[in-house]
Image (cartoon, rainbow, N blue to C red; front, side):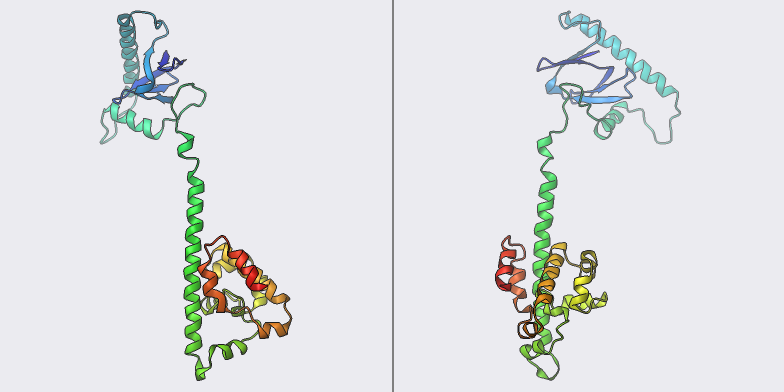
Length: 270
């Protein structure tokens, strides 16, 4: 059989099944079991048997098409008789063919003129999704940082003996992870629960361990590791005088989703 399209293209197929929409499902075999493609109604001119040419009369073509359709239906009925119908099955071939078309029918790329899924409609989906995930990660990191900063401030206010924030900062162990800018009481508590009690332990832990322990994104872990390395390179006297405390946490986390965050970090650390 031959399929003729409105753009002048024609190609062979083994069989076909006409749909209510006007389109046809194309098969490689006359029993219509091996689906190879689909042609919509607006692209289809007609489907003719091999012994009927486009120049023949429409009456001849109709007769040949009807004979071929009857033959196809007879073969389909014979195949159906070989199987027992299960409970609840119906003989609605139109519904079965529609389901098969939407679920199973693939498009053979070698058949010219067969309509497939437009690449331009799907090629950008992955990039859009990745960008959206990055945007959400940035917002979550920003909110985490604000909560962390507020927790740190509250802890300083209610600390025993009324010690103010500056005195508490000076009394902090140089190896306390909270000396790393961006790590406040909330994150430090999570890290301690995972066995990470010091800056050294933080530097030695893997990115995956830190991300799982503090429940943060990989980008935030990278920032922590980078700052911890810079902090460790400072002389001990400078660590005590100017620890990388959480004083800048709020401003940094507000810019977590800003592309210029790294440039701001470099300025602060300079």
